Image (cartoon, rainbow over all chains, first blue to last red):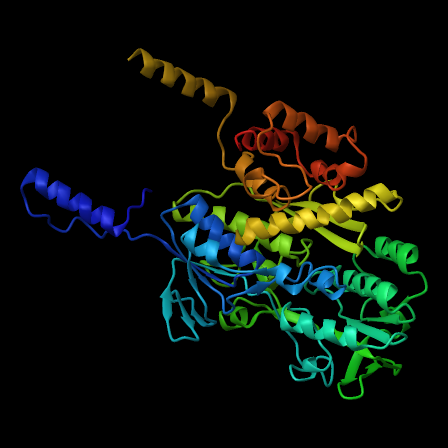
Length: 425
Length: 102
């Protein structure tokens, strides 16, 4: 079906009238330009908004994002390690407006009416949509660890949404005495950025090694294995031998209670730990708007993996961390890859066409040291209606030489630049 | 008229050798994931090589070599793993589409 804008339609009617000499009668309802509303300006949402416009210039695309500046979680660990300034992971929406013609509204989506197909914003606006894409990322399950809520996070930062929290944790690390202990509490799966806590440990270990070499790192983990585990542990042995201790779930690593004032943590079976700087990565769930729209099932949102359309509400697509897309991890790269597939699927669906067979990818680098990078890379396909890992893929070789690790550290930098340009540029 | 016949003949030919169906590999859609590392339009802003401006033959050979383990070493990093995730038809479609990026 060809779609024409109101203006084109009006011009066409006027031209027809001029040709025939008759005043136009109602020629049927003009089909307005299709409206797509995208909620969330992170990797998933920003990619979707941009690609919707790149694939179909006739679409009206509105992107809802409360922040003027978006700080990426990827590379926020490098800020913590002192390898780069916070400003280097800041992105804005100028290109989204000027280059791609996306209508960016800096507000928070608070309500969705799937029957009326409207989104209500905190600024009072109500937007009509033909297709809605929710890419809200994660919210924290405050209180899941007793004593840990938004207020406690001002003393024991999560730094799992980058920005002021990243700065807060960095300042605490800078203020810590040499010989102090940094504790990080890691959640059970699933959560945003599975290798993230361990890259963070690596980057903080790098900072300690260069500035505070007598300091220690304690990882209290609510699980018994983690992403790229062998590679991280190999890297820690090579670069930070003796500095890092990992306590898994089975050794009473699951933190169940915190006292923000004394920085004391209590584990499931009673072990107590006290740190000089404490970082809690809290258990997570889909962002609030997913719950408000009724597209969640428990903490996350079930989708049809071919189009990422919600299995619970028609014409609402949920992508990124909020969606149930396993075995794809909850990563920025995954969200962006999903955003591209969803943009193409929406363009096809609005034109009454069958979407192409989807193909997704995820490539995540982790920086263990300035010259020591590791990665995980996979292609994903939909098989028998389910998301599946394509053949191949996996993590960096366990026995790679120094040149390989160095190449991956350099590629990580390049990967970040490319992603930033691809998503916000 | 002659031209019309030619067009009609080529359409018939295309239809006979390559039946179009919804699940055919969509080179553009496949290639979009590549750009998150290789940069917008296939032009890399960093040390990862650009893929824009390469010939279809070069792209196809390189992807197949990554997949089959003939191209390894420090610089190949993730590509030896990723290339195994694509079928022959998908590699053809990828190479064909990426070759249009200038």
